[in-house]
Length: 240
Image (cartoon, rainbow, N blue to C red):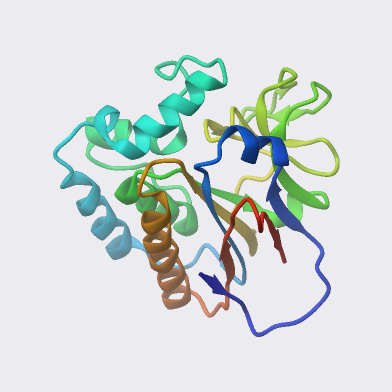
């Protein structure tokens, strides 16, 4: 599936997974979407309630969901304890199960978090203005810097899967575990890159449904024309 905006212009940013990631995780199904024109004024209460209701209808706990189990296997392969470091969708589902609601942060983040728990698939949102050149999911060299939400600087260890840009800034650590405060969405954010990644057996069909849902919600809430694509090992690069 590919949807593109009607606007034209030079490509300034790209997103991709490195060849090493595709080699080591051949079941990966990533979805990338770029959209300009979002703001913090939209009301998403109805949308969030609808997706939270879908998440609440799952009978099994998050640890038994095939979407989450696939990420737990990936984290184990990366040398991480999957009950210590969880993918973002599992963390959100655990919080939702315990509290019955999700924290409200920003309309776009609230929407994406709700979509994430409805599909049990990690969804990341990056402020493109804070990204240098490109975003690549790759193994860290050890030279990259990561800014926490509390303002501290960390250095991912060599071999850790990160979201890196051209300036060796890590915009997420441990793949889908934790994003950086550097490119977090703010009230002034207008230009974003949204990413969803899945590894389970029915990932392609589920990511296609997630992609359609997210595209439809964005265009209903904001006057925007997103560009999006589901990537593959043979076509791994998303330009925008």
